[in-house]
Length: 306
Image (cartoon, rainbow, N blue to C red; front, side):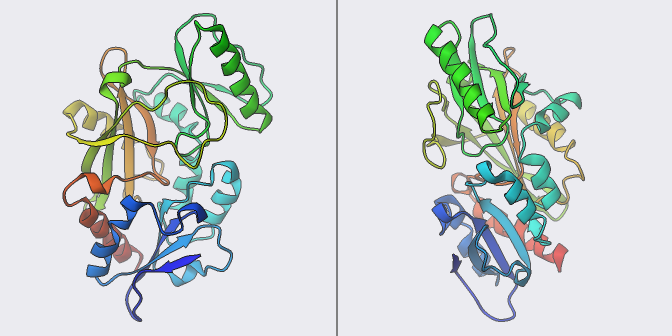
């Protein structure tokens, strides 16, 4: 399904890519439509797996909310490789849609949440030490299939083992991370970067309230509801974000946007939870001028692809 928001011959054409469940975009993304139209850019909202779409007819194809790809990642990555004007580009999509990139970033010196990995078919038992842990698949979107477990609770230990088995049986890699309790008060900080004339530049930050209340008991919609407020980024957070972005394969000039998600570690210093380069919510409704900055970033990339 394609929704035509503006169309005049001769204008540059941009596709904003979504999924069938959000065929007319996430409400936050819709805020960029008017600024794009004001710049003389024709915009269509397009479902990524619609077989009738001629992707070559677009001057730029912008990934926004294709949030149903997690169980079909191979298909999604293969599709991305067929779209020459995709941003962020297909090689970034391939790298960033599997969270095993965190191991690379950690090895490069980026402070990250400590993570161990359970491959499909591996046997896994909850660690002997008690404490709270987070389990999630290495390929996911919208906090799907993600749970929080208190290993002092025998029922939680059983549910954690069942969670890993469920993912393993589906051929999925499980991430095992300690739950960092500072997130309960501080929340998660997302730092948003958008392309400018001189490359990626910081735009704004938001606070995401703590989301994980307990074990994962199976599918629960396309994404979990989030409690979002605006936030001022601190210098130490921006420093970790810059260090993170410096590790992106191929560099950041190819990127239209980036989102760096941080939480406080045990010592209070920020650690990376995720680097989102494929389909992150950009939260442009939470910062003055952000919809226009995103439209300007798209116009910048149009000029690069012209």
